[in-house]
Length: 324
Image (cartoon, helix red, strand yellow):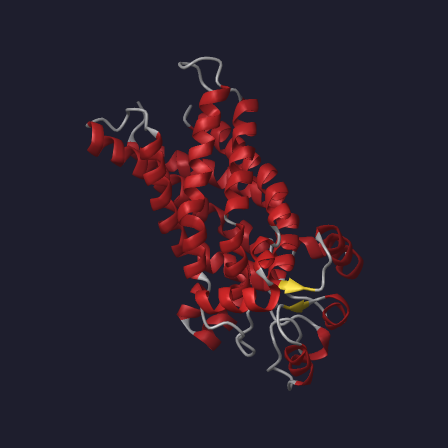
C-alpha cells in the first residue's frame, strides 16, 4: 500500500496534469461564457463567438489563459488532495477504516467541504482570469460590448482622464492590465487584499453545492458504467462519467456563476454592485430572471469536455504515478 505522503504527491501531480488539460480545452468557451454573463450586447452564444473572432481574432478566446495555467497546479492539488483526504477522514471517523469505500453521503460531505476550501485559492484566480478576459479595445467596446450597466457608465469611461478609466479601456485604446501579475498588483493597490476576494461570497454559493454535484454524479456514473462491482472503470467510462458530471455541475451552478462573474468583472472606479444581494436584485430589476441563466448553454457544452478531460487525465496520470 502506498504511504499517505506518496498519495498526496500522486494527487498533486495528477491534479496538475488533469487541470492543465481541462483549462486548455475549456478556456475558449469559458471566455464566451464570461462575456455573456458579465456584459451585454451579444444576441446569443453564436453571435458572441463570431463577434470575438471578428474583433479580436482567435487570440481573443484565450485571454486570461496564462494565469489559470500558472496556478492550476496549486488549485487542482487543493481540490483533489483536499477531497481525497476529507473522504478518507470521514470514512475513518464513521467506519474506523479510511480504506472503506465511501458512500454517497460521505462523498457529498467531502465534496461540500472541498467547495468551501477551494474558494481560498479559487476566488483570486477566477477574479484575475475574468478581469483579463473582459479586457477589450475601445472599438470593441463601442461596437459590441459593454458591462451590464447604463449608457452613462460607458460615457463616463470614455471621458475619464488617462489612468482613471474603467477596466476595459485605457489610454490610447490599449489594455489596462499588461498581464496576470500586473493585474494582481493593480487590484491590491486599488482595493487592498480583500479586493482579490471580490465575488467570493457568490463563489461559495456556487462551489459548495457545485462540487457536490460534481463528485457525486461522477461516482454514481462510474459505478453504473462498470462491467461489474469489483472491476475498475474503463477509460471511456471515466471520460463519459466526468463529462456528464461536469455538465450537471456547471448548469446547476449557472445562477450563482452569473452573480460571481458580474461582481468580479465590476470595475473598481465605476462600481455598480455593492455585494451579492445587491447584484442579484439589480440584475433581476434591469434584466429579469432570465439573466441568471445567461451562459447556461455555454456551461453545458463547456462543462462536458473540460470535466471529461479533467477526470480522465487525472485518473490515468494517478495510475501512472502510483507505479513509481
